[in-house]
Image (tube, rainbow, N blue to C red):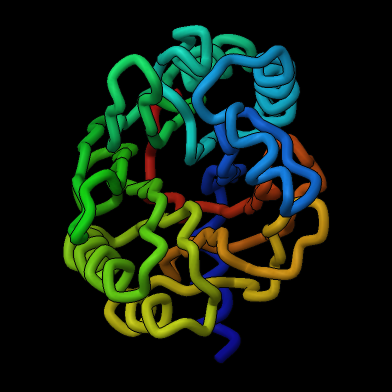
Length: 266
């Protein structure tokens, strides 16, 4: 038993420590009460001064992390003053690599997207459209390194309906099963003990280190609907929710140590 533990420890000796962050930013719109979803709904279609200020705060916070997954970002439309929000925050926070995946295009009004900001250069980026009755959900797959010892990070924002989420996570499980080291993070719109999350965990080597990390609503969080799931090959050193109320969600952060066989480029 002691020899096995020592061998396990040796796997991580010299392994890179990676700081991960997942955040549904609600396109940079703060919310402090349920009624504001109605009274401030105009902010989802028209520009407002608070948005760019919030993005600057989010960028400052995110700069402490290595790989950041964003949900509910806009790729540049009327409501954001035609600013690509992922690009803007990556520039402010000095991330050399950024990508966005636009899943729902509403012309000049809105460009609903997922975003990735990274201090490491991905070897591959792939855009996956998730199944569902209504189009507009996607998963962004970023691969770091090459071969069997590469790290795959999946950023997603799931549907509101359970049947759609089951199909979407089934698709993610099928694609992710081709890789040994995986991180899946995002707004999954369901709790850790939900049928869809549990089905994903049973179908893959993924697990959730801590389940009761309340991220919604940001002003009085009591629901765990934002998640970071990782393969058992990654050593989880720390997981926590950050008290940054620049959205209706709170960001979730995790620090992991990678096996020393994973080599990712800076």
